[in-house]
Image 1 (cartoon, helix red, strand yellow):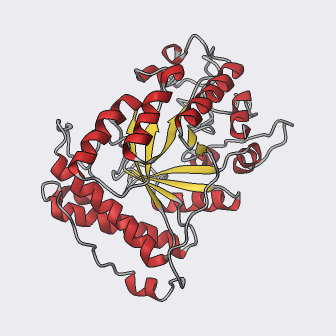
Image 2: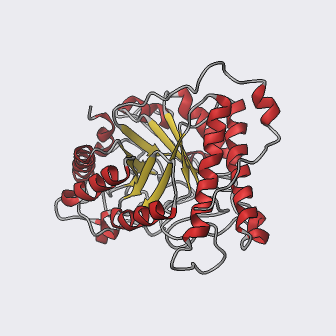
Amino acid sequence: MISICSCKNSHDADLQNNLNNGSEIPITFPNFFYGADLSYVNEMEDCGAIYFDNDNIEKDVYEILANKGANIARYRLWHDPKWTNYSNLSDVKKSIRRAKENGMYVLLDFHYSDTWADPGQQTIPAAWLPFVNNVFRLASELYDYTYDVLVELYFLQLTPDIVQLGNEINPMILQEGELVWPIDWTRNALLLNSAIQAVEDFSSQTNKKVETMLHIAQPENALWWFEQATKAGVRDYQWIGISYYPQWSEYSVSNIQQPLKNLIENYNKKLMIVETAYPFTLDYVDSQNNILGTSAILDEYPATQEGQLNYLTSLSEEVKKSGGLGIVYWEPAWISTDCNSAWENATLFDFSGIPTLGIQFFNQD
């Protein structure tokens, strides 16, 4: 394993003047996270989205979700997305503030890209492209960026509780163009360990513990990925994050327990499903095609509000049995507006903005 030393930062002097006395403050988490990825909310509200509670009273969507039992909010962060005004640091600050005002924990998802990062693309930010083949310089850039974002949030009292270092990082992170396979684990481990080190250094210098997560799409991919990552020396992260969409997975809800349990026990990590969703209908309310269509429907769970709730309830039970500690619903508030939506049939609000039965899954304890 190649190691990288901690990088100095322009905020260090300010941090030293603002340190808490004593040792690092531990985090107290609930027994189980019931979460919502709310990255689209600010944009949807700017597009005219209105949300109602079950009494048909217009309310803030954060208030609705918190009252239903949601206890963690997840947000994607793009590096410098010039193509949109959302999911940049300024937008994420607004979102984190709203989550904290409603008593939610925060999971911050660094995409380490100017756009979507997922199993099909891990595009390096444009600002770092000159260093794509200089792994030590790139590790330094990654460290500084991760550290600086956390410091900036810290001074605004917006520090997240968990940070996800990359999004669906099945491939190697920070690539240019077509994905390179197999993973160059010397490069990948150095980069990931640099990001982890940035969070560790932030935590030790502020006495405010922030936990780290590595996120893979689908359980079957997590099995081989974490085996390879461990052999390559990726270390000191606390969480395994999994995207689970049954239509793209080898595992059904009924047999997902074992691979999750294997991940938890083999690597001694905490585990959370950080993305899942299920349609409550196959109907449309706008002209945009929906991502989750007929192929997403399982025989046991019809595309109804009851089917959506039963899917989430069953999945929650299996995750708990495996020893997992949470489920985050992806974009439950991405309803159709003047901007349209590719997800309006899989939100936790119906076409009138009223909660579906599926929203009850937040309140199972």
